[in-house]
Length: 497
Image (cartoon, rainbow, N blue to C red; front, side):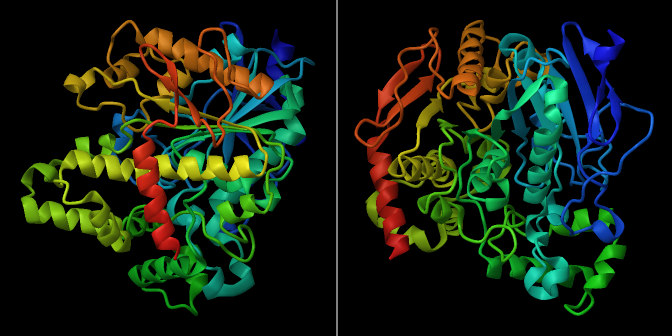
C-alpha cells in the first residue's frame, strides 16, 4: 500500500494518499517558484529534493484579486502566493497500466481561479473512466500576462505569455513523469473551460506546445482571445504608470510587493491581461496559425452553453437602473466599432437585456467556437460540437443555461451541496451528468465522444453542422441557430474588410 503512494519523479520522491479507491498526489512543483528575479520570466525546471516530499495538500494558488463571482462558482482560493506553480494528480494506481491522461486548465478570465478548486475533483474521472487526471495552477493577471517585451527587450521576452509558458511547462512535466503515476504520455487530452479553453485554443497554435498533447476539449472558449502586441504594450504602459515606474526603470518591478501588483491589475479593463501575439511565444494569431496547419491530427471536442452571458448580467444590479438611452450606450460600449453594422442588421429590434445577453454570448463564445471548428474542418481535422442547454432551477430559474453551468456535469460532481446551489436539485440532472462525463471519457480514450447513452453523434462538418444538445432529453441538431450564425458571419466579414 505505502509503496504505491510513494512515486519517484525526475526531481525526487512524492508521497500522496489514497481516498477510497483513487490515489491522489497534490502540490507537486512543476517549475521553480517564479519569484524574485524569476518574476515575469519563463518558468524554469524545478530543483531536485532529497527524501520524500509530502504531496497530500494542495500548493498555493496564483496571486489574484478577490471575486464574488468566483466565490459563487466555488473557485475563490484562499492562501494565494506568487510561488504557485504546482500540479495535482488523481490516478487509479501508480502502476504500469499507461492510462489515458487528462490535463485540466482552469478558467477565470486569466485573472482568477485555481487548479485546486473543489469543482475540479478528479476522483470520478479516475474511478469511472480509469484515466489519470492532472490539474494545475499557472500565473494570472499581471504576473502571467504583463507584456513588457516591446518596452524592456529580450530581458523580458515572453513576459506577456508567462501563464501560457507555465501551462507548457506543466505539459512537459507530464510527458516526463506521468508514466510513474500510471499514465500514458502518448495519450494526453488537454481540456479547459472559459479562459482555460481559450488557453487550449492558444496552445493548439503554439509551436512550443507541439507534441505535448494529442486531443483537446474546449468548453466555452476557443482561439480568439489574444491581444496584438501593441495593445498588450499599451496595457503594460498603463500599469507601469499606475506603479509610478518609467519605461527605463523596469528593474523596479522586481521589488513591487505582489499584493500591489494584484491591486494595480484591477485598474485595467477585464480581459486585457491575456495572451499576447509577441516575438517569443505566440508568433501569429492562433486562428491564422491553425489555418496554416498547426496542431495536425489533434481531434477537438468543443462547445458552449446556450445562455453563456446570463451569468454576468444576473449578478449585475445596474441593468435595472438603466433607461432606454443608458441601454443604448451599453450596447455601443460593448460592441464598439461593430455596433453600427450590427444595429443595421437588427433592423430596429428593441434593445433589451435579453438581446444584450444573446449578442454577447455569440460574440464572446458561440461564434469563436464555430470559427475554430470550421478552421479545423477546412484542414481535414476531426471536430465534435456540443451545446449545453440544461437550465438551472436554482434562483427561480434565473441563471438559465449560463456560463460554467456545465462544469459539475462534466466532472460528475452534481451531488455536491455547493454544486446543487448552482445547478438546482432536479433528479434528471444526474442523467445529464452521466452522459457528459462518459462522453468526455470516451473522447479521451477513443478520440470520439459517442457513447450508447446518447443519440448518434456525428462529426461536425460544413454540410450539416451536427451539434449535440445536452438537456433533459439530449438530441443532435443540425446547424442550430442558423440565422444567428449567418448574422455573425456578416458582422465578422464586415470587420475584416
